[in-house]
Image (cartoon, rainbow, N blue to C red; front, side, top):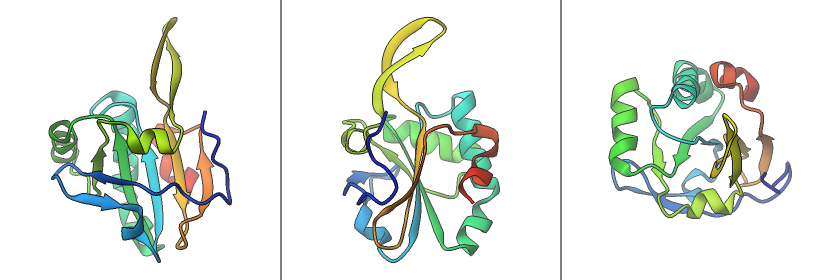
Length: 149
């Protein structure tokens, strides 16, 4: 779905997290960032993915990675998701889809024979200089940390 590939400059973003804090790509300058897009907070696949990242969070931190999740959910839904599953990383409430569209992860999907538009589960690994190191389009929700690391 996305046209971004390894080596591309990561599109700049600025959006509010679950607590209303403004988070920008530039906040991560000098750090590696795992930017993961997921369809909907507290759904089975998204929960498996977020919890897998949570369970491996110390390893990510030790290797110099920060983690940031993005969906079109409202801040309240993102906060509930964090509270329910003790997620140690922020989640962007990208209701206007500005970040989602900048990364090209919104588009046609099919589920149980129905066609609709939604977020394609995609992860971008961004290096210390703001370049995309890797794009993971085929996310294994229960083993996503291993895919990244």
